[in-house]
Image 1 (cartoon, rainbow, N blue to C red):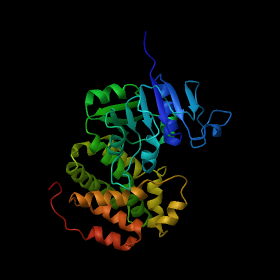
Image 2: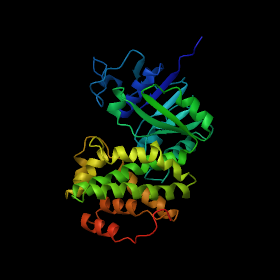
Image 3: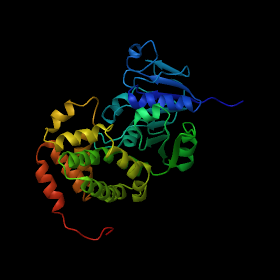
Image 4: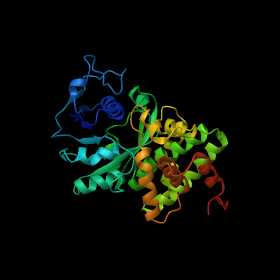
Length: 323
């Protein structure tokens, strides 16, 4: 008799709800944990992702799971520690958030490893807008664990023909790509907002891949991971799509709106606001040259203007592309 997988999704925001819908599509029984499950409408639609009714396979609850085959943590990175601390480690735990914990400079799996040193841990990342995953449109992502066989086994619980989930044994590289894409998206949006042109945006995205590869290597990851779904794939989506809050934040900054004012006008959180200074500190501590990340951090802090930021990046020496 085939066992029906039990998947718990912690966080009923747009991404958590989309993952719950995908898990149900993959044949799992799903527990979607929400802080206030009563906010779900009578039509079984979550407020953060309206338009997608939940099937019977998804139970929305305010009670944390005690039994599961897989736990997906879909809360924002800055709330991951507080949220995860309350979750019983009854199954492998997958971080489905992107960023760096601002207070500690730790990546999501490092936060989870502190809390659950004996649990199987992984990270899920890729070029995915929540509303498209919720709609069942074709998408791909990567699930990374320390061992690829573990990653493949867990990825199979969520994989369907329209949602291709690849396995990786480079969680560090996957996390760097997931964190930095929000920062680069702010830079790409700012370039377009300042009317620097499509050429400038393409060059910015491409040179950022080299920057992230250096940082990944310094932290023990593999630079080639940044050429995959968690790197260039996520950058292409986040740096060009208007559904990206970070890209829209950059557009506003490039148009001359102060960073905090632009962030306050967004519906939802632009993770790049918190990630940029944390990632800049991380690069600096490891001696990694990261001019795009440093420039975005300065823009968000208000210590440089858009005009000065453009001049700083354009004034950098031109060397060999892959040196």
